Length: 361
Ligand code: ATP
View 1 (cartoon, protein in one colour):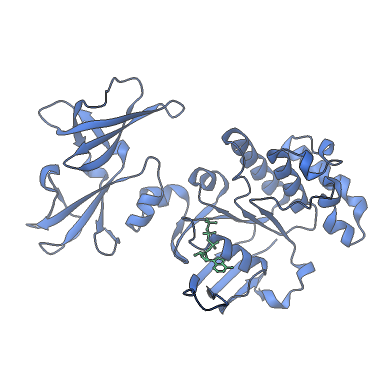
View 2 (cartoon, helix red, strand yellow):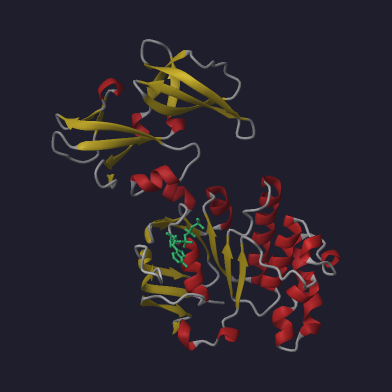
């Protein structure tokens, strides 16, 4: 079992030819992952997720700060004693190795090859998938899903303490991906390992994580369980990044101590703001409803998108050159071009400072 601690870690990439501006990939990063915890690093493309994982794996060196495994500096632990299993997006299987050789790599290094079948069996039993039949094949004879299983089996076939997964299921179709997540969760519970998992897919984050760490531009923006980040975000960035369909952001100004959204109406602010301040109201599509004419704000339907599995339809509507999203029950008849009248549930509104994006509570 492992704890991982990052203390004020920063990493900049410099271009050797010095033609390009240096990229500050990770900035003053502090994180502690507890023993047996599953933490998902979630953030947009280029925010530094892979760099973080590579730093923790010891594949990159931080410019500043320190990384500890079980409170021991990473540099002081020999690579072969780190007990890290890694799975990356492209599986990185060696083309001329059969799966058996790939899976047995670490145990063979330690003259314990006889333990490989037992490891493969355990993985197969837990996941309920026949891996043995893949063992005699080369990567070119494996489908994407099979390669992914072999690389997961390889990650587990060692004295494992920490798993580092970097978008391991990104190349799988949706059905396979859902199944793979369930299998992974079972393996983690059985092996009681610490997991750091990188993704930009929030459904994946939700199903794998005990805790999600939202990252942007190399920094932690907020961390917590999914429902907390979704319902109680600290910033407009987190509010907009989490939640499907995306939250609506309505711009307004403070007047007479209230938020004034012009044609959208007025709303009480949770905290005093001087008149003239710019404030954004975030309202999720499920908190806007279609109502009768007299009470509602008129908007024109642009698109109707049905989500059959989730049993709702998303209406994309226009009002004065602004596009919003409204969630309505599936089966109600709406047509593009039609005018609907909407009601906003102000009790669910989230307020943000327009300049900093910080939540006003
Ligand atoms: P994605 O989700 O697209 O994989 P990411 O969040 O994993 O992105 P990183 O791969 O960690 O992001 O990259 C963070 C930043 O560092 C990016 O701006 C990237 O261009 C830059 N970067 C990463 N590796 C290098 C490198 N070896 N040399 C120069 N810049 C790099």
